[in-house]
Image (cartoon, rainbow, N blue to C red):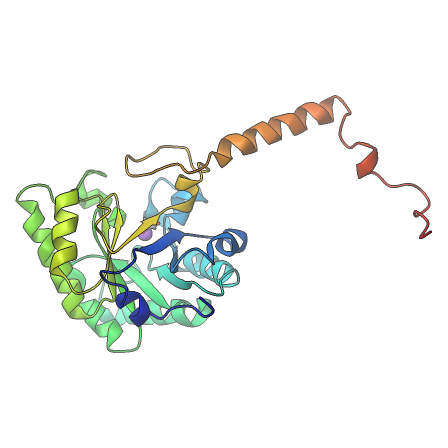
Amino acid sequence: RKTAPLPDDIRAMKGGTPIVSLTAYTTPMAQLMDAHCDFVLVGDSVGMVLHGLPSTLGVTMEMMILHGQAVRRGLRSAMMVVDMPFGSYEESPEQAFRNAARIMAETGAGAVKLEGGTGMADTIGFLTARGIPVMAHIGLTPQSINTLGGYRVQGRGEAGDGLVRDARAVAEAGAFAVVLEKVPEALADRITETVAIPTIGIGASAGCDGQVLVVDDMLGLFTAFKAKFVKRYAHLGDDAETAIATYATEVRARLFPAAEHVFADTPPGRG
Ligand code: KIV
Ligand code: NA
């Protein structure tokens, strides 16, 4: 792909080859995934993954904009979606528009993502009617951790119908895609069959229209905990720690720097 897909292009991938997405928070990581992902999500998971916060509730607009700008510089062929942080959109559609417009204008995002189902439908409609493409996020919505009462699977049993209603509501309001986080596989499949927009699963089902993972989780860089739905494709944290320990040993033994890392008093001839 030469140019980044638009939200409508992502919407049109419903039912086709699965949509590929990862989170990114920095330019170099964005560059690594640009050619492989359809869209890159600047998730508010940045708060926990890079800033050591205990949850996503402390993430600010300024953090999302700074990381959005960094990621944007690393992308050419993938679309960028930026999370709206906790407290930046729940109060009213007007508040949501003001902050979403700032994110779009200051980061060059192709869309914003916000958490919520039926309760956010009016806001999603308000934003899309005013030129801001919205990705919805339902199921386990980490910004509501204090009312959800923990990070458990959402929509089991009777509660499944509520999530189907949420998915319908965000689709009808104009969301171009919806993230389903930590819901039973069968429910994810049912929602995927029910709604006309792509479902992007994380802890959901291989039957979703796409998948997303937190990149530091799948690379083994974030190891404070591992959710069941995370697959570790690499162990870069272990590699990094081994490298750091080796460096420390070599410095203390005066083995680093070696001859090839130091400079002579006179520059080498150009023979
Ligand atoms: O913030 C994030 O990383 C997310 C994904 C897990 C969907 O919202
Ligand atoms: Na998020």
